[in-house]
Image 1 (tube, rainbow, N blue to C red):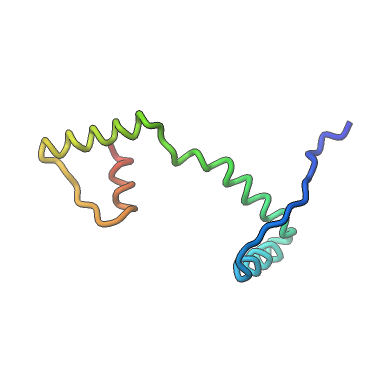
Image 2: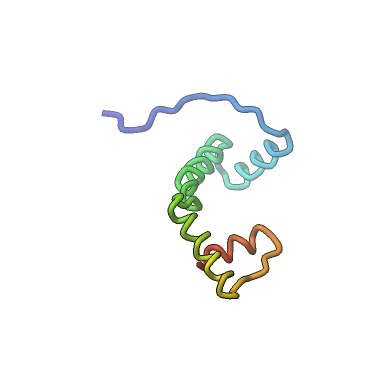
Amino acid sequence: MNTAELKERTSIRINKSLLERMKAKAKAGNRSFSNLVETILYKFESTEDEGLMSEEEFFDKIDASRKGIEEGRFVEVRNKEELHQYLDSL
C-alpha cells in the first residue's frame, strides 16, 4: 500500500523578481522550487494561528489597559511593534 500523499499540480502568478529570488534560494539549498514553496506553505500553515487570540482574550487585554490608564499607569507607544510588545506584556 502506498502511503505517500498525492501531489496536485497548480499554477500561481507572482512577481518576477520574487520568483527569481525564490528559485535562487531553492538552488542554493539544493532543492527544487516546488519543494521550497511547499515547505514555506507548511510552515505558514503550522504558525498562522499562533499570533491570533480569541475575542475574549482581546477584550481582556483592552480592559486591563483601561484599568492601567485609570490608575495612572500607561505606556507611550510609537509604532505597531511597540504596541504589540506592550499588549503581550499584559
